[in-house]
Amino acid sequence: MSAAEPAFALERVSKRYGATIALDNVQLAFATGSTTALIGSSGSGKSTVLRLFLGLAWPDSGTIRIDGRPLMPAGVQPLRRRVGYVIQDGGLFPHLTCLGNLALQPRHLGWDKDRITARAQELAELTALPKQVLDRYPAELSGGQRQRVALMRGLMLDPDALLLDEPLGALDPIVRHELQDELKRIFDRLGKTVVVVTHDLAEAAWFAERLVLMSQGKVVQDGSLADLRQRPASDFVRRFVAAQRRLPEAP
Ligand code: ADP
Ligand code: MG
Image (cartoon, rainbow, N blue to C red):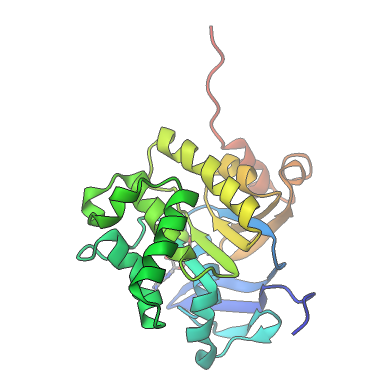
């Protein structure tokens, strides 16, 4: 395994669901330690990309490579320990407290209670979650707190990479703004390989210099915000950039 190999790669990957083409011959690689935002309209295939990297879905054709090696079913369990996954509504188990949610994977790996609690407290600090929240159930948390716990769960095993699927999609604007700041700080500080899915161009550009824009199962542009703005690869890109709403000018 060479350090020059990308952490995650899709090689000519296609994936269908019945008559729907979720991914159409996609070629895409994410370098180790890089942060990338995957953007595009709803249904463009963004979640499918992340799910393929986690072995939650398998391609009809093409190859998924993790650190240069083809992903096989037998590689999925070890892979999930090395990759944190965070989804829009957090995906926490409602019948477990936050700490209970955080403890699931580490306990399975044989961590003792003290180690789990210590790691949870360390991550509460990193994500600015009040420690007393750890004993509550997910339903007793605000949306922002739930996403902080979901992020902590993704980080419990200190993974090499984080895949985040619209992690802030369900939050109100103020909390979202606050968590955008915190996530960016965390990405910069941890230096992990990060792929973050969002349909918001401003958020994407806040998180990452590299933006990968998808439409209808294809990558339509891969570049910086300046590339998308000044050198749109197609009319779709131009419209996607133009569709970002700005506040009206003051009278
Ligand atoms: P995005 O995350 O960009 O909104 P997805 O990757 O979730 O897009 O989906 C791409 C396409 O594949 C969509 O048309 C979606 O409806 C379809 N799709 C995704 N997952 C499934 C599934 N499990 N069963 C059927 N269709 C699916
Ligand atoms: Mg999605």
